[in-house]
Amino acid sequence: MPFTLEIGQSAPDFDLPATDGKRYALSDFDEPVLVVFFTCNHCPYVVNSDEVTRQIAERYAPQGVRFVAINSNSPNTYREDDFEHMVARMQAHGFPWLYLHDATQDVARAYGALRTPHFFVFDRDRKLVYTGRAIDNPRDPSKSTTHELEDALDDVLAGRPVRTPKTNPIGCNVKWDGKDAHWMPPEACDLV
Image (cartoon, rainbow, N blue to C red):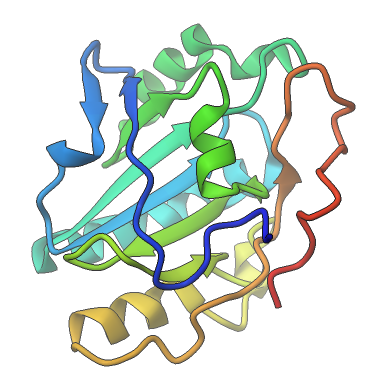
């Protein structure tokens, strides 16, 4: 059985605290398209591509696309990924998404998050239509040559099948509690 959610599967539910002081569940989002992405506070692939993600989120919001970020990294593995640092990061950057904390890592396991960042795009029925990266060079976005997340959003908004529904996310491994920083379960291999 694959580690990561398969195309066509339903979005796993969640009930998580956010940096705005509220809790959010999957049912709180009724936009036609939902992008759930796993991220963190410190990974250079995340930090360097945050502005690209911001631009995409802002560009597609008027078309009914909602971005929700989840940090599942263990602060025991990497201290900067604790909730307090999440709050400070949102205050400093004012990102246009909610930033949720998955302290138990149960949501990361349910989705099969592999790296930070790792994007999951769900249609109106909350079926997975795309999983993978936003761009092909998140560490240095100026060198990116592909924009798979935007391509997927264009396709789903146009009502057509996503042309490339799976790509390999590029970034740091999710920091699993009690595991080596580079550990991943054996079934968590490349998606394509």
